[in-house]
Each structure stands twice: as structure tokens, then as C-alpha cells.
Amino acid sequence: MREIGNGRIRALAGLNRLCSLAPLAHLSTINEATGDGTPAQSRNLHTIAMLMIGVMRELATVLNDLRGAGIRTRLDDPAPWSGLEGIRKRWFKEPAVKMRNGVAFHLGDKTQAVRGLAHVQALTDSVPFCRLESRHPNRAQFVEAHYPLGDAVLMAAVGLESKEVWAVLDDVKRDSSEATRLLHMIWLDLLRQCGANIELA
Image (cartoon, rainbow, N blue to C red; front, side):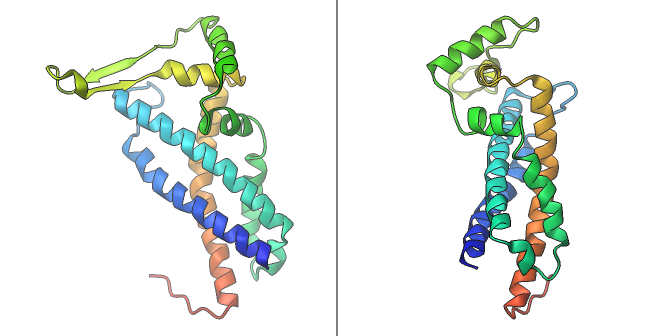
């Protein structure tokens, strides 16, 4: 039970991060089909998405530990855990692992940057170095900026293509909310077994 308890604490910390990041992503929503949005919106959405991808990969590790601790056998209703199994497996596969290890929580090293830059330079479609928007034309310090080249180089260095990145972003949007819902059901199951009287508003 101690291993399950440890896993629950780690999962709760992960859920806190996902629940905080999700509304921030909504506030920075841009038109994905056209890329329309201010430089600040594009930058913020990209950064939040990278953080959510990293947290989802970390959460998958916690789910793996809970699985090894036998949490399924402790549940009165194992159905929510069955749903989490698909999420756990998905985030242990590529390209999610590449994005977590090479981009989401890291800024690479000089070797990675050189390798990625060479790849980006070979692309037929150019990657903008910077997008600027001045909210106060007479005050340069209030310029909003987004530097797409930096992340493009890091992703290229670990072998990520644009279509793979968008696929992982689709996964994180779906799996972050679903993991939150299913883990909540599991926590309620375990609390009721301890005799807790739970009423949902």
C-alpha cells in the first residue's frame, strides 16, 4: 500500500500542474489551421503545450509505478484504470518520449543546436527567426516577441517532424483531461474504501 500511496501523491502533483496549464492554454488559443494569433499567443500556447507534454510523460511514469504496485487489484471498480492503461502506453511511445526528453524540459546543448540548425537550414519551408508585435509603438520595451526558430531547431535535433508534433499536441489535449477525470474516479474509490463519506456538489 505504501507504493500506491506514494504514487497517488505524485499523481496528484501532476494533476495540479495539468489543471493549471489547461486553462492557460485556452486563454492563448490560436487558429491551428492558419496559425493566426499574436506573437504572444503563439509563444504562450507553444510553451504551455511543451510543459503539458512533459507533465503527461511524467504522469505516465507514475501510472507505470502504480501499475507495478498492483493498484488495479485494490479497486472496487477497475474500469477507470483500464482507461488509464491506454494513456500510459501512449505516453511511453515515440514521439512523446522524444518531446519530453529533448524539448519539453530541456534547452539542448551546443551539439544538439548545431545538428538541429543544419536540419532546419535544409528545409524547403523557411522558419521565421522572430515575430514581433509592439503594443506601444513609442516604447520598445513593451514589444511582444516569439522566436519560433529556437524550438524548431531543438525539435529537428531530436528528429521530430511537424506532423509528429501536432499529433502529440492532439494527444495531450485529449489525454490530460481524460487522465484527470479517471484518476479522480480512482481516488474516490480508494477514499470510500477507507470509510470516507464523499458528497459531490
